[in-house]
Amino acid sequence: MKFNASKPALMHAINAVQKAVSPRSPLPVLTGILFEVTGNRLYLTGSDTELTIQCNIEVETETEGAIVLPIRYISDLVRSLPDIPIQFNSIPGSTSVIITYGTSQVSIHGYEPEQYPRLPSINRGTGIQVPQDELKEMLRQVLFAVSNDETRPVFTGVLMQVDGKQFRLVATDTYRLAMKNYQLEEEIEQPVRAIIPGKTLGEVARLTGNTEEKISIILEENHAFFSTADLKIASRLIAGQYPPYEQVIPREFVTRTRVTTREIMDATERASLLARDGYPVVKFTLQENSCVVSVQTQAGWIREEISGLVEGEPLEIWFNARYMSESLRALNSDELCLELTGPLSAAVLRPAGDDSYLSLLLPAKPPKD
Amino acid sequence: MQKLKKQIRLLMEENDKLREELARAYGQASENIPAREGLKNLWDLYQQGFHICNVHFGRIRTTECLFCEAFWDREREGGR
Image (cartoon, each protein chain N blue to C red):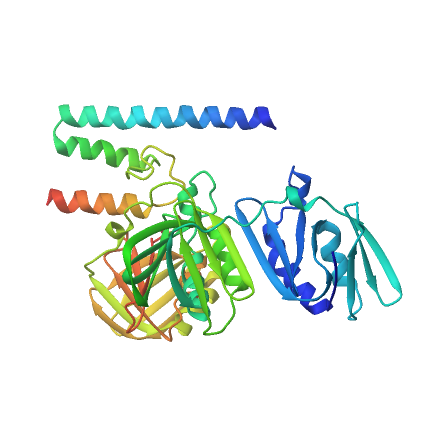
């Protein structure tokens, strides 16, 4: 294997795949990145066997070939090289590579490429196409609600559901829930549901661009595949049944309010500064034509009145300030529509005038004096 | 590390079995006692910090749970 590449292109590809590589994997070959040159493309692959990311870039190829190079050295080394053409030349009969930059050289020992896991092959699955910027935003709107509790794997993933033309993402840690719908251009014949690890979708969100170019998503029985022109991501699905989330979404409300998202977000964050250490809860009082955000602790008190439209009964309710801020940030709307069924029941947050998104947040218990 | 993992797996399996037994015990109890009393028992269990939803029934509840709340709301509405 012998090729020439630029530093920015190499860094772009290494950054794309390295999150899938575990530098402390007990299998030495999995601590590396697979470099594979075919035609004038260099394919870099990172994998922990659950998640595999492959990125390809254009290079000047002299000889095709492949090698696995340990991420621990190759990532930092390429980052520290000067921005001049870089040549990779693997030594025949060995698993080492010589990297030449200007008049300098460095050699790194790697592993046999044959031992490296390949991207799972796509057999037959349900495929859809979504603009990259839309998917990125959809993921941002739901990923905050994914659980990080590994003892309940189903909740560490996002439910991806395709039915007809509707493409839906749902995430819940059982304390809050986020749901986003998107209307596909083409109808899918067979409805499909898959639970995709939050880590995978975090990488998809990180690596997809702010472009209208489409990303292809294929859902199979055990794997999900995401691909663009220069990127392929394959992930094992989370086994298990996603709980019937529809039944936790309240349908009737006693109080509704419509306020400016920015104002309520800023007020919540300011109020949380005075909240009790370890229990950052903030009181929301919904009354005629305003929402009052307040906290009173030993540290002092704060009261902010935000004018808005309030319908129904006056209500006092407490929320965890951090969860409320995260839910508001995910809203992507200037105006918030907050719907409540009572001081102890889940609140529904929606972007005003947009039915494609909602999030639920359970109230917190008032702090004990 | 392997030993620790094995112990965790055994404890988790034992926990699952205990949860199933607890669910069965509640099921049997609710057949023999009036519905309101069965609900009270569930409410007590919930207040003691356990899940009463079918997603995590019997597990320790560290925070409030959307599924328990929804279950409880349905039961309350059904009782009216």
